Image (cartoon, rainbow, N blue to C red; front, top):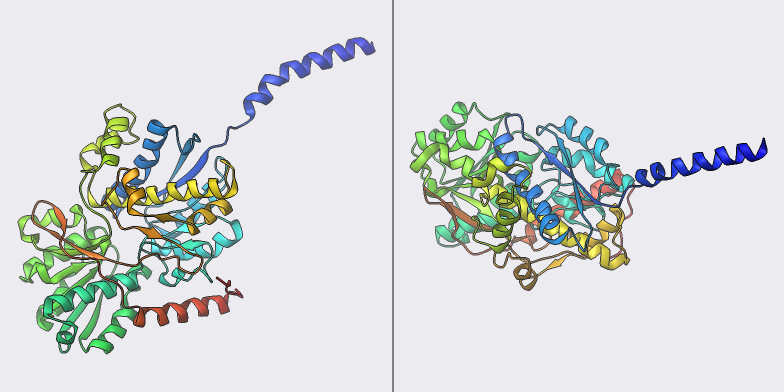
Length: 437
């Protein structure tokens, strides 16, 4: 009887072996994709999500992943809704081998995820958006907002205006209006612009537009009455299209109308046709697809029938597509850093954070990646999670976008005290002892 029981147990163990072996998961680099392919902001969310996904997928198809480890994309639809965004985070943070980094693509979602990041030890890269004071890495250990913040961008755009007026001293007495999305995102530059108006003597007025931004008649009636010299636009989605159409309707000169870099895509200007010619926006990377990385994406994904979203081949190289691509590039480089720093290919979110904080992508490395001249070099440190903070201006010529200015340094004499004040307030409210860097 004992022998029979032993034989049955051994047989059961043998049968179970393939099942156990099959259940073991191979390690993959898990990257959530906080998408919004639905809702009023979908026209802008789609190209970013495609650029983000395509770059990582191209690395899988061309290189076998990063250092031989495949990347697992985990999409989750937020519809640019903060509640849904938090739900996506909770749903995906333990997906696969564990989420390595989040790109929320929403200032509202970012604000909600900041306190969660330090608990879950998963970094957030709110690239050029989110909480500006997260630039202070001494306080915000888990948040990165390189290559520049909204406050730096506001400062750069004012410098561009000053240059066009003949010098910063010529801003005195000028009128600059801000038309902004009535949300945490749209409100970000207001305090900086108020401080800059005090410094340079221009009159500043902020005009809110409620979500989703289709109703702007009253706003533009005020603008027609006030006759500002320059208008800044902090919009998103359909709000941008409507604002440009309204500016055209009151014959406001397009070359004195400047959008934040989230208000400077093909989606924003094409509905107005040639009437939008001359419109400007901030920029930190080139438009177009004349780079080797784009050619590789077309070759290994679209031409090979392996693109996650094949119907969007003709949108490769659009401004927001390139925005997603550059975000993926920087994060893939951070993954390489993390592997090197920790001597393992199986990294965690905490290791990824170290990789982001050691990020140093210079022009030589950009050339190796097939992106020479595509964007600015970025170096991150323990204290500085914003990076260079420099911003250029691009212009729409009726058919395409082109960068038409130099890159402007932010006015840190104005911005740094604001960053210090806000970050230290956050530290006090959340019992955070700033790191020594």
